[in-house]
Image: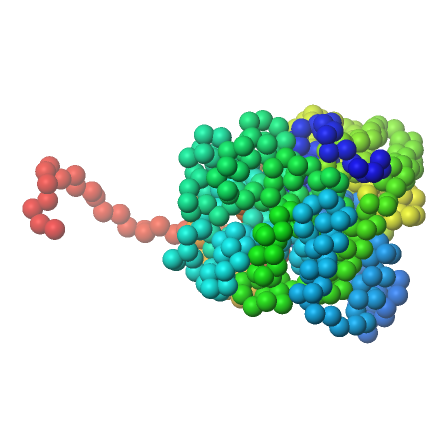
Length: 565
C-alpha cells in the first residue's frame, strides 16, 4: 500500500457513534436535518437568490447568471450543496470521453479490469452514484444474473431471494435504494438475531461502514464468520469514506463495497464506485443502464464512467499528507482571526476514522456572554453574502466535540472541500459576525392565546392535501404535545411568543426520518403559516381549534350483556 494512503489498520480517534464533526453520514442523519445541516436545508428563511435571471453565462458567475448565489463549502461532502469539486484530471477525462462513441458493455469490461488493477479488488464497476450502486447490487443478489427474475423486480412473488438482513444500526435513508428492489428488510440487534434471521430467502446482508461495524459485537469480521459459510453476500456502504488500498472492508469479509464518486475521491458527483466479487458486479452491471429493467432509470454515461476511473487513478497518486497539511493551514488562518475575539475558543480536531475524514475547526463560546448561538451564526452566514455553509450546535448538551456542555455553543468548519482563498474570506466573515456587539435577548413576549387542546391541521403540499392533528398543552411560552400524521403519531414541542407559534415533530422509522416544523401566526382559533420539512422542502398549513359537540347526553352504564345488537 502506498505510504500516503490511509492505513486500514488504524483506530478511530473517537467513537463514530457520537455526533462529532467526524461522524458518519448515518450519525448525521440520526441527529435530524436541523442539527446536521443548519440552514441550507429548507430552513425558515427563503433561498438566497440574486437579482439576475438568465440567460446562462458559462464562467465564474454561471450560477449568479440565473439568479442563484453559490456557497463556500465549510460543511463537507453533502450532496445537497454539491458534495466535492471534481479534480482537473476527472474533468479532462470526462471531456475527452464525451467526444467519441463507445459500446458500453465493452467499456464496462475494460473499466472493471482497470479498477481491479488499481485497487487490488477482484473487479470494479461504476454506477450513477453510490445509492444506485446499492440498488444494482441488491438486484444482483435477488436475480443472480437471471434476466427473467430481473425483469419481475420489484414484484418478487415466486422469487426465492426476497429478504435483506441488516443491523438496525445500519438503517438509514440511503437504504431506500435497496428497498426499491422490493425486498423485505429484516432488522436485527444482536449476533443471535442475525443468525436466526438468515434463511434460504436471504438475498444479502447490508452494512453501513463505521459505527457498530467497527466496534462492538456486530463487527464486519464477526458477521462474516456467520454469513460467509452460508454463501450469503455482504454489501458494505462506505459512501463517504476515503478509499483504502488494499480495501479494508473486502479484507474483513465484505463481498462488495460501495463508494460515492463525488465525495472523498473527488470524482464525478453523478458516479459511484463498486469494488468486489466479479460475479456479483457483472450481475449488478446487467441490472443497470443501458440494460432494461429496474436499473434503467439510473443511467451512468461514458463520461462519468471514465471520470470515475480517472479519479481512482489520481487517488493512488495524490499526496494525501500534503492535502491534510493544506487543510490544516486553512483552519489555522480562520482560528487565528477569530481567536482575537474575547470569549472565543478555537480547537482543531483531526479525526482518524475513514468516514468524512477531514480536519475540522470547532469555534465555541458561552451564548450567554456573546448573546448568540451557533445555529444563529450558521443561519446568518448561510443567508447573506459571502454565503457560507458550516455546522453548528445549539449548546443543548450535544454538538461538535469537545462541545458537550449546556452552557457552550459552537460552529464548526470542515476543511476538505474548501477551495484556495476560502479561508481568508471565511476568517474575515466570521470575525465580523462573531465580533459584533449584541444585547441580551429580551424575555419572550407574552402569549397572545392559549394553544391547549386539539387542532385540526390542513396541509397543502405541492400537489396534494392532507389532514393532521396537533394535540397541545401550553405552559407559559412552552408548548408540548403530539402530532398525528398520515401514518403515525409522534411527540411535538415548541413555543408561542406573542402570536407567533413554532411547533416541531420528528417522525423516525427504520431507514427514514421526517422533521416537520410548523411556523405560523395565531388568530383567534386559527393558526396558519408555513410547514418546513428540511430536505423535503416546504408546505402551507392552516390549523383550526377542534370544535367538540356543544350538546352532551348522559351515559347509562349497562347492568349486563346487551339484549339486542
